[in-house]
Image (tube, rainbow, N blue to C red; front, side, top):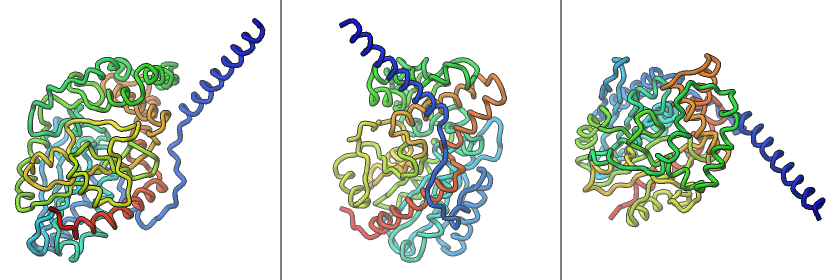
Length: 415
């Protein structure tokens, strides 16, 4: 009997060791390679920097201004301690006839994601702005809401603020308490120099799995991603006041949207979700709005919060636009282009770890230049991938959804 118990115990231990070894290898050899079909004709939309992307957006905006005299373009400067040339660029194209609808597409709320968002906006300009579309619908493009993060390859602003947790018209947001975050703050916000190859980081997935088992994946994810307003150097910090661009955008959005009764707002993001897939990922909405969204996106899956990996958050940019236009028919949507496969546990933990190391390095430094290069490379690749394969795929995904959803929005009569 004792021998049987020892044998079973030995087998279990071997299986555990094998599982840990397999996870260790998979986790520490994570690849950003993709195998989607490459369409070289659309790769030119992706630029190498904020300055290049902004230059191209301005050129496209000028072309539109010449073609459609009622359109206008302007810049909103964003104050910085280190850079005097950071701007949010606005392009507004008025419908050719009196219209009651406007489409808003915003990019770069999370700065490092701005390159992809900018590419999608310019793809939209080239392929969807035409006489037919503008007959019934005006267009407002908001380019690079977080220019500091875009230019310096951070997700947050110069003040370490996540704009998608900071966007509101009421400062009460900054009094929100996230108790779950406080319980795990020390785990995800180490206060020491980054050393990527130490045992703590190589086996980070074990610590994360321990917390997930303790709390459940959904509770762990919600605690982290909801946003927090107590730890200025921590991940997902929403700030203690409006960031400069949040203050400055109110008047522009309000005045442009004033003539319209119906607003369809799309905010462009990268990182979360299945690799190479465009996820429709809205915050919870009331039933009437949900029905309108399902009409526009009929045939496409919308994540309404009924999946295990769903989370909610406060202070998001789309809801901020909605609050500015509180008396309008408002249809919000967040486009999320998946990168590391964060819907699976390993990808989700890897995504968190990359963010954690980048934030840690920003505040506490790195043990070596090699550590800094490794962290910066992985961080940028997680949001602004250099893969031609991935870039081709997300434009193709965008085309499929834009072809149907934009046509429906333009033609449907909303009540």
